[in-house]
Image (cartoon, rainbow, N blue to C red; front, side):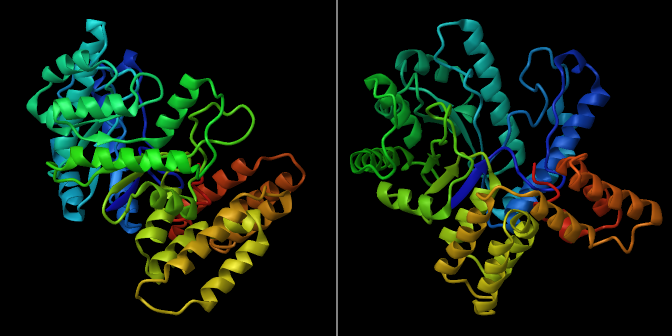
Length: 436
């Protein structure tokens, strides 16, 4: 049904959210400044998601600063009501599906009453926030199931609205998939299955010390059967079944369960097929470091893309690809020249090929010459509009970069400031100036 991502949006101008210190939470003006800035950032994120066909998004719990903390004195629902109304109209009109995933210490099944109280406050905040943002069925995802009686007591303390949004997910330490599934059946809650959590938990309990190889047929069977079992818990819900997908980060020192930088479209396609998951029928939440980049690639590759949509993505990636590999830049340009010029859907293999080339370029370490070439191309968009002082400063910055006296990030920051000043929307809508 949809492929989505969590909380942070990379490479998008104005999409970064802000936080507050507890020591300043009593300052209403400051609180409202940060809260409005975060809602503006969410608006920008949702606009980007709609432009990429992404209908699934996990909202950050920090959207409203310290909202569930007992020392927060602000009636944030009333203070921010007009802005929430605007966002809700856009969310509902676009059919976006939202969720929240409070942190690992939000435990309704804790033995400590104060921990349960804090968890209740956090879940109720999430329910109120999601109700303000969407008229559809939103989800609040918690890990749980390993302590079923304590969990049942905690769930019973929730308001009907919060309980109606609650779904449970297995994890690496406290709740095996069978525990979570049993708890969901007992409490009448849907289960979100996370295959990587299941593999990590099993490897720890058996002392194997390593995860199964990608495509392991025995584990593929486990994941397929557990996904099918979990699907039965969603039958009374309006939303489609949801599954979390992540890959193990590779390399020395990577702890078991650490998420990979990205999830290539072809890898996701194979895994979903092995697990019996159809992204046209089920919701797939990607948990990966590059966030929207993988979600966009997988959405367009597996759910369909028009040529204009793919060209928009190429415009966004162009200078990052150029920086890492001029050869791949030329191959992508040739790939578009060979593709049919149409407003209809692009053949899936053409979309997959585009992202194969983007991923291959990203995997090549950038060299100083490639970085300088990309910086000069970006500068070319507005160097004629720049004044004499700006031109001299940029020439000096590029020379200092070439000599090792100035970082890439410092030059990019100067280019970003000039792009904003001169309204270079083509660049501001791309990933190069906003990579982090």
